[in-house]
Length: 233
Image 1 (cartoon, rainbow, N blue to C red):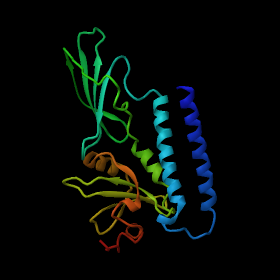
Image 2: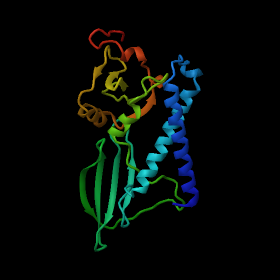
Image 3: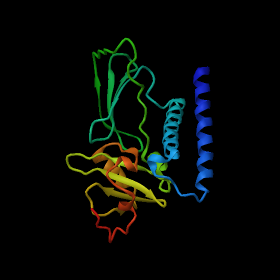
Image 4: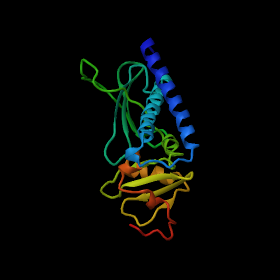
């Protein structure tokens, strides 16, 4: 890591720590929160989430767990409605062939879908790097940690699973440390008691994203009534 990168990282850490202390002070006050569009703290919280993402990416790079070494070639992409995928070509020790591995993201790691040996591999790539290095997506545990504790905020963070041809958009909110899942057209929410349910949604709808609740069609009211009596559509 260069000196410039080190200074940038240290600055990000300092900003992150200062914002965290600011939020702790504000959350301890009894003042009425302003609407999200008029609350500068909502902007600061979104900025901090971006800082957190930058720090997480650096930690992954520092751990040297981004891609296989030894001359391996890695192609990673996010197909719509399905989990992220990787195609890895590992050169054989003898230099006569390559092992091709197809991997699928499970929400906690990579699962091998298939592998074989290929020969006469030819690779064409831009002379100048135009694409980022492959990075593991955030795990479900990490994503859930990002949304926990944000429900008291004017515009809390939620976990969003995109809609597909067979599934509605799904939103997970952490209400008082309880994970609640609701689909866009559902008449009620339900409590997530087993994270395997979320892994299932990931397999069916792809990697979820952290968004502000205001960016979804749902509102606070649709996550707070009793799931037995809530029928607000």
